[in-house]
Amino acid sequence: MFWGPASGGVRRYILAKRAYCVAYTGLQHSLVVPGAHKARTDDGVLTTCTVPALPIGKGYRFPLRAQPWVDALIELKPDVIEAGDPYRLAWAAIRAGRSLDVPVVGFFHSDLTRMTALRFGGWTRAPIRRYIQHLYGHMDWVFAPSQIMTERLHGLGLARVSTQPLGVDTDIFTPERRDETLRARLGIPAKARLLVYAGRNAIEKNLNVLIDAVRRLGAPYHLLLIGPDMPRPADIAHTVVDFVADPLILAGLLASSDALVHAGDQETFGLVIAEGMAAGLPVIGVHSGAVPELVDETVGALAWPNNPVSFAAAIDSVFARNPKALGLAARARVVATFGWPARFHHMLGDLRQLRLRGEIQPATVLALKPAINPLQVNQSHDAN
Image (cartoon, rainbow, N blue to C red; front, side, top):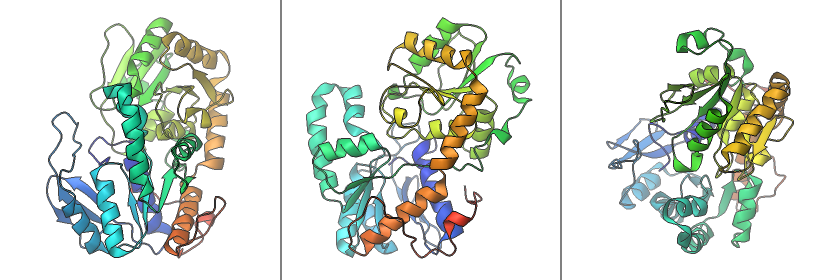
């Protein structure tokens, strides 16, 4: 469900895992995703099922029938199925898994309770909690991308849950991709303090907070917005770059900025935050969701959620210190903790335990038929 032409972090996670499997293991990583037409590659790596596009969904598609997805999964005969969203396709994965007698794993990418409450009101919280308990209670295991999400799922009575943070390709997202000619090409003043946001223009991203904060700060701050359908406020210094699909181009845009700003308060991990840190940027985020697990005063600053005054002060505090030193510390943190090889090595070990019908242990680090030791080589990103 989260696969679409303007997909962000979830799609990059999926493609990174697929590239890792190709480069370092004997595994086939197959995808079953929505598309305009039914199609399948010869090797079964990518299967699409025909799904109508949502009228205002920016290219996303919502499946109405589960059976075609169940059939596609059964035809692939996987050893493990990972459900990447909590909607109809998750139930299709469960049905296919039971038919094949293989484990089904859910990845809790989206905080469904808070997301629906934001869009439809607080009355949705109780029924959505019950739905989450019901759905993930049918799965053999659940991965959550941050500790706070793991704790929330445990709080709902779900025991078969472990933390599986996302990661970053630190060879792609690196300060070395900084382009000193970028500002001139985009018409941005050379002396501007360039703040970058990359992602979707969605209500939970709180772009109004970013815009209001920059409005309060004024010159020399300049906001670079990267993504589809971005706002274009007439009263602040800003530049808009449409959605960037190529991670190399995105990495260059991040590395050529001075700080990453992200006012979203519902992040379950915050992949673009980690990518900005890998690119050598200090980060200004908020005290909410999983963001504090990535950002503190040693790599940036945190503001109070939905508070433009607090956010503006946090931005100023970063530039009042040494933003370059903070960016270097941010890069070091990501390289040490969130490189894709280590993250996937751990995850595939957990899946191997599950396939063998064992219990996943928090400290398990096992290879799943690796062609070579994935921790002794640099990750290839050709498949991205």
